[in-house]
Length: 150
Image 1: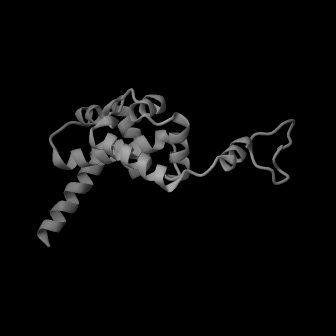
Image 2: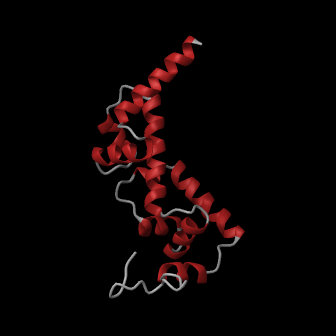
Image 3: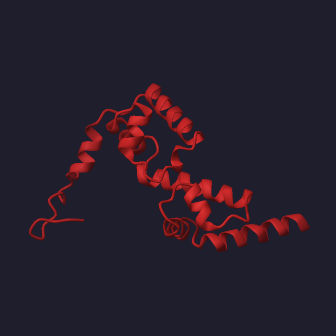
């Protein structure tokens, strides 16, 4: 929390500028929510997340949706932001690929899933799964072996 001269300017119950701005924006309509979600689903299905250079501006241009509306969608509908959403999409793609292609290296998987480098894949795995990609693979193969023996 930031302060001015040791005093929090919002301590009297006022909202921060970001909170106040978010509340003033009109909520996204159900029709637009469905439209944006459909566009994002199509973009993901077409592998758009694999572009390691994608950012909010390039995505908004690709989808023909304003950057502001897209940001509002992530905030109001997904309760997230673009960066976190994209990392989760890429993480899920990486996990799926690891299961389907166990002989692929983490370098190949990170590149195929749009991570700018292998260390980014490792960081996301550590944060979200609590382990490295290699450890996660080991857990998955152990679980599969246990399920096969039952």
